[in-house]
Each structure stands twice: as C-alpha cells, then as structure tokens.
Amino acid sequence: MTVSVTPRIVEALDRTRGTGVLVLHDLDPRSPAAGSGLRVYDVIVEIEETPIETREDHVARTHDYRPGDTVRVQVVRNGETKELELPIGRRDNQ
Image (cartoon, rainbow, N blue to C red):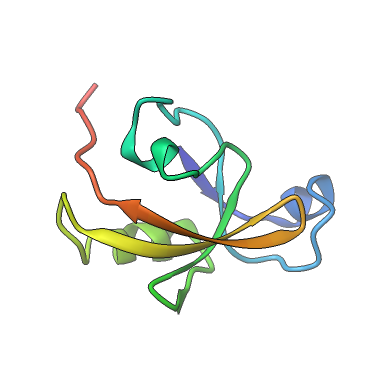
C-alpha cells in the first residue's frame, strides 16, 4: 500500500522534499518489488524519469506498463536516493 507524502510524513521521516509516494506496508517479501530491493518506508519519487508527486501520479504511471515490464524507479531511503529496477506484476484481488 502506498500513500502520498504529506507534511506529517515529511516531518516523521526528516525529509526536506514534500512529494512522492510512501510505501507503507503490504509489501510481500516474495513479490517482485521486494525482490528488486523496494522496502517499506521507501519514498518513490520517479518512475522512468517522470516525477511522482502523489499517489495518483504513481497509480497513473504504473498503469502505463504491463505485467512483466521492468521500470526504473528512483526512491529515497533514509535520506539517500537509490535507483531500482522493478518488474511490474499483477496484484491478486483480495
């Protein structure tokens, strides 16, 4: 599950930038995303060099790809920017 970064999240994570999408939970350790290095509390700030400012941006950009595609994602983790290659998968309906 992801949420848009809010002023409270910026303060809690000691960040200066108030945009992006925070990975909260529900990151299955067996998922392709987790296997590619995405972690809970990472903040997604770019997908394929497109800035991600809100959860809506994240959802819209993710829907540009199909399961099996791999996308470059820039995240901020503990104040450091990291580049990840994430495979797009299917989410099971629960």
